[in-house]
Image 1 (cartoon, one colour):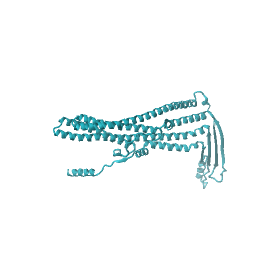
Image 2 (cartoon, one colour; image 1 turned 90 degrees about the vertical axis):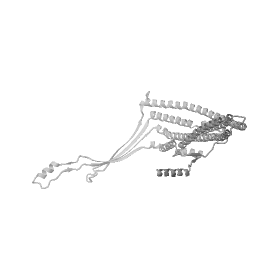
Image 3 (cartoon, rainbow, N blue to C red; image 1 turned 180 degrees about the vertical axis):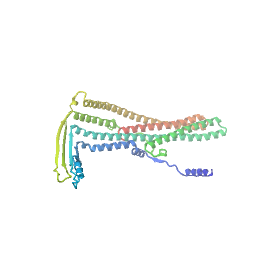
Image 4 (cartoon, rainbow, N blue to C red; image 1 turned 135 degrees about the vertical axis):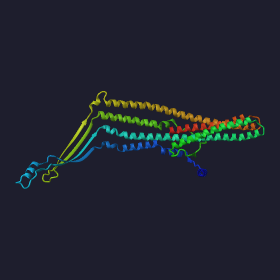
Length: 446
């Protein structure tokens, strides 16, 4: 038992002298780390590498198919005359038996062949690899932009929550100070005990509230740690950046034209439309334009190569052919070629319709972001004024309370008005930053 107590004491001393170091994290570091460790970003990067390989080898479709080989064979036409051999062996008048053996032929055959097919669709299809590569690059940029936006919003959200906790803590500190003064007044017989009990109850409620807020901050920090790929998401984080002090960003440079021009969705749709057009053209060419096929082969053969007495000079054989082919059934109504071309046309029409929806959504989102920024800016200005007025009201109420002219309830109400005004300011600031980040992302200024 003594050993266990001693171990616990030593552990307590170690924990007491070991500082709990929190990791410093700036906004830029958070974004960079998230982009570097994201599995989705890595997957899309590998997709680009695969598309680059396909783009680099696209001309291989024009390479002829060439084959070469050598075959050796031994015929089974050779034989042994066992009957004559044993009859001579058993004949006492013959001293030596002779076996008659016919040697089979050994043949060595080589071959070289080459074939090549051509259709104009092969040239048209060369464009698909470049379009696929461009599409994957757009997809990667879109994923990076979305992840960076998510990290920034979460980072600023944590800063706002921490500031809100600070406001609550200031309120609790003031209530603790007030509680001490109230207890002194009660001890002096100036106020009834009920006021002390009321203040203690309110203070207890505020402490529960701030504990919930602190747990929310911890939870959000762990979410941020997970998002940026931290190995240990429970490690404390210290956000080194702070909320902006000015909220009067010039948004005139964020135009709707830039939002439309830099839209990754519109760029991706344009690539997909072009890709469908290329596929449709290539399918038409391969279905309704004759294909040319060329082939050539050469097969030298040497017979009985194991017997120099009967060895024959090698001879060769080969062929050259040219074929023009066209699938006539593709011209029939309801053929697979006609059906697939019609399906591609429908897909293109769907993309055109979807493109209009994307444009309309961009316009709506852009206007909503602009309006949200303007509204948040007005709310920030109003909150600043409200804080100033609430603080003046609190100062006057506090002075009046000290003089015994107002009740504690009035004092607490004035203090709560100051806290609410500060929290309202924080909410308006986050609304401003969130809308500004969305607008920057739309116009690719992030």
